[in-house]
Length: 401
Ligand SMILES: Nc1ncnc2c1ncn2[C@@H]1O[C@H](COP(=O)(O)OP(=O)(O)OP(=O)(O)O)[C@@H](O)[C@H]1O
Ligand SMILES: [Mg+2]
Image (cartoon, rainbow, N blue to C red; front, side, top):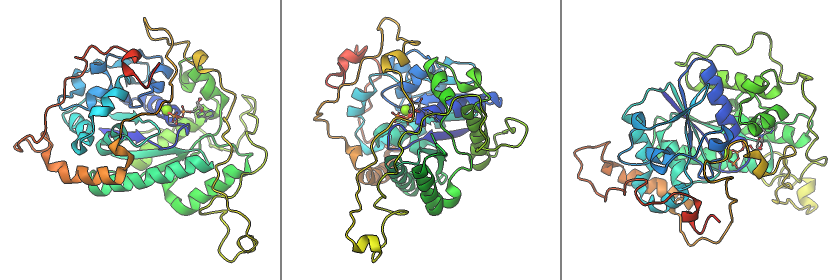
């Protein structure tokens, strides 16, 4: 039994794509796999074509004192089962504010289940959900596109994992980075990959995930690339990445080599058109690590500015509008997913300061009921899920419209 969290505090780094394809690859290897969508936006749930579950049957049910995975009605797909996200997660997050609330998922999974591997996709944020995943996991994979912001997010995630390991989950293995959406023609991708390799050495998986239009096309059709076009860059890369994940994290999981023959990530399979490079000119040097001017260097002496401005955001490939992306999987009776409206929230999330909350959680650890049954309960039981009549996004004011 293994639990792997896919996490990067920065968005758009291929977390969901990696979660789905690693889960599918492990399923194809013959393992029983559960894919958990812990992102309140529920993109994974919709990408695989799952229905939005009732709140009490969603991934939220794992973050509850009464949680029992064996009793949850998961949705089954050819290579894996899915525990989908509920739109009510955003609101539920507001009452999961006690330090001890980071332990519920670990407690629930410890009750027992029948999966060989549980893979958890998280949102690009430090939240009570992400923290539950990290505390419940054996290992963490950090997908990182070799660009400025994703690299910064990946390094922050690395630090969060270290804190969680030191204070809350000593069994957590050292995280590994998975390079994603790598475009070999971009010099900045080479530079940021080099930066990560120099600093984190063996913590980078050897298999990079290259840009692959087949991955995006498969996602639009609610399929995995293994079912749509296995002999594509995306198919091969994720197959090999899964074998490597098994080797480095979970040697107890049998991982046959996915495809016979030598694997060459530089080989052009010629089966799909090259994606246009996203940015022809290299970005300004980062303020840290590789590329930053050394004190006393000519660049520093000349007063050349070391800007910390992120490179212009650029999509790795042309994207369909969201409404089209999800047209294959409308939520029954509700039509398409509503757009998220960013508004000023008055909710003060204690998880905005992960260091403090991890310390508080470590201090409060002994009060967890399941960990220490004889300990008097030091908190009120949580309200049962799904008993409040909340049914959809209309209840989520002010986050949804
Ligand atoms: N290797 C790849 N090649 C081409 N496109 C990709 C690749 N990986 C991911 N994408 C596309 O990039 C976009 C972002 O990927 P994804 O949703 O997996 O990132 P994420 O980290 O889960 O984002 P978020 O933080 O918003 O949850 C998606 O449209 C996806 O189809
Ligand atoms: Mg995602």
